[in-house]
Image (cartoon, rainbow, N blue to C red):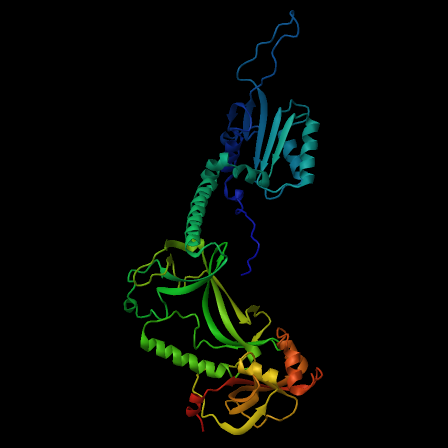
Length: 497
């Protein structure tokens, strides 16, 4: 199952949702441990702030030793320190012109500038704006200066030490999320390890598991739910793969038809080959009869197009609430508990056609109508007692061992036969001439090149055709194909005209 690449990210913080005073409060909280402050004053809260939204004094640890013995050290007041001006602007956009104007409005040329200056804005800040900010403050003689745009403020808020501030102003707590995530991971690892102890360490597996709905209170009594057949509250599925994110099950498997040349396919849901065995004799007989009806039609299709429609479905480890390794005396297989949605426990699924043990993705294929909606028993079969087809020894040996039962012709020598007709083949086996009864299951024709394309995994195909028709025809020649199956004597008393 293909999954898009996901990058870890958090949603944007909407600074614009804060009113101007709360934005000032946010910045004041963020600067508390930015420096070793002597004091921080929320001057913007009182109005008439002389350009200061926040005024702060940084402790001054400069040496206060006299230069020589004759010089006296001036008394320094303990509350004095380096003055910082902090401006807070909820700007939607901040360019070089605007940033210069903000600085000029708050720091007048010719007057003593503050030691440090911080401009915090809710907008994103470009390089040109940073350059203008730096140039203007250096010109005014400010010693330290910082421009905090939206990205810088988000980075600060995502630091673990500021999680309290993030929660206070925006109702978010990454620490709480991380703790919750850690608990989730521990649960997933526990579930995965328990399943590994049951299924083994192999990637592939074939293990039936009873999947149960966590909401159910009436297991194992199906009669408690009138809609149980449509929306089962528990069902056995076969786990086929242990994926890094969960268990992959075969949800269903149907008989299917696929034409890889025309890019067409079809399937029938009349019989689900993934149904679990049943001890109910009546149900067993019903399943058997349904399967026989489907197979009767399925065998009338070309062998190269016999396939199976499969659905691979995932139950994530994170969705498994509980694992019962031992089950119970009604269902001794392992049980897992999941929250079902409309009778299904799966979080996602993928459908493919399995053709000769190869999974084919159906993208680009068109579904056509091949299988009937209702399956009925085919009519009487005709036994052509006088029809005997002589085969070379190698071909007859293959037929007698059921390795391959296909007749080839480049003329109309077998066109008198219809599907289901019975006739005889003849050949020498172990030095003795022998005969065997066969039934024509499927007859069709196609170009030699298309036939080779459709049967590209049969590396003996050229030799088999050559033995029967003398040589391999050219690619555009029409080849008649007759696919057979054996008929036993007891069958001659059944459905024979």
